[in-house]
Length: 115
Image (tube, rainbow, N blue to C red; front, side):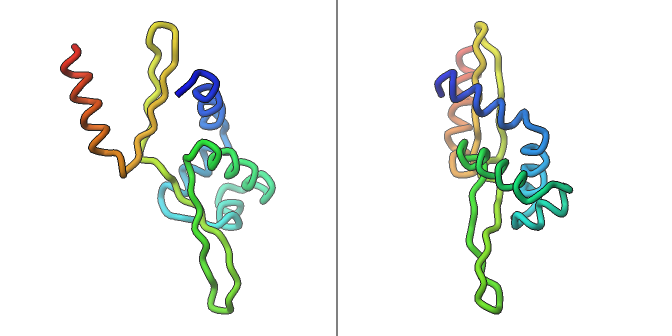
């Protein structure tokens, strides 16, 4: 991950409202309206933060259909954890997703072997 992207990800997860939304959707997928109500944020604020989170692939959305045929999106977290490290005056950000857990194990093993 290049330095500019690292800074953008750190800025995004450093945003208080973005963290609130991530915490809410880490428990279960929610619509923008549900997020606005739960986090006591305006809908425009929720949509701006969701857009930031989607840009860095931290959130995904799914379309749901109500009984009367109306569609709406629900948002959910797209990662298991993040690790931020500082090494030789450079930040490194690792984003672990469920689908890359074998990669995570391999990385941890390599780090142990390097020590």
